[in-house]
Amino acid sequence: MVSQVLVALGLSLVGGLSTSIGALFVVLNEAPNLKVLGLLQGFAAGLMLSISFLDLAHNAINSIGFLKGNLWFFSGVIFFAIVANFIPEPSLAQGSDLTSKKKNKDEGGKDIMKKHRRQVLFSGIITAVGISLHNFPEGMAVFLGSMKGLRVGLNLAVAIALHNIPEGVAVALPVYFATQSKWQAFKLATLSGFAEPLGVIIVAYLFPSSLSPEILEGLLGSVGGVMAFLTLHEMLPLAFDYAGQKQAVKAVFVGMAFMSASLYFLEISLPAEISL
Image 1 (cartoon, rainbow, N blue to C red):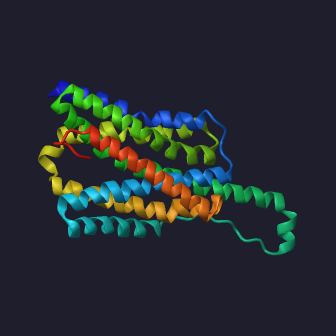
Image 2: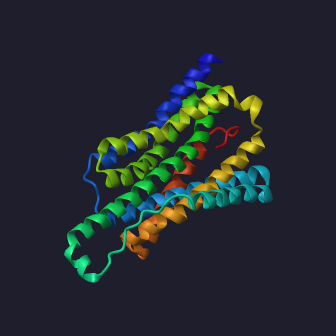
């Protein structure tokens, strides 16, 4: 059993740390301007919405029923809507008059850019949290696949690795723009991938005795609700502001299509007895 857990842990590290490859695509290039950032934020929002509605919520409804699945999903939405009220929004102090604004135009421009960076950094952090929660059951799937055999576990780890590369981009990009630090962007994207080996550890040592499959599916459904709220509340407004509504919406659907294709590729790589 211990050797099987170690094999699953190693395979999950291969899959999870592929977010670092996505991060490298970001940090090896210059930080994007606001319009490009807006388009990529729209793309990342599409990834998040696809994970939320077409993966987590969909699986919860199929596993525990339409009513229970929706109750769990909207409990996640309501929970984080309440939490969001206590999260301070980045804001700028209003100037006393137009004359003072003109005199301090350069300083005001710097303040506006600082506000943009704070907003984008917050967006990057919530993306990292959301993708980490999404990666957690993928680690469980790698463990279960490894129990069936090394070939199944290896194939699944490779599929998840390819699936996780754009997720690393979605995490690293806003952090790089906001902090101008390649290390911070790479570090946060890499850390988001560690949720997969954590999923292996949890399912190997805690899941069999402490958490029923129905509760697990419900919790993952509520995670989908949290991700949907964060995407619509934080990421889409930034994409609209920076790239314009029409272009941002196109980027959202491209992101959704990309993640849907990725989820399909991942699904057909799984044996029939295992599902994400």
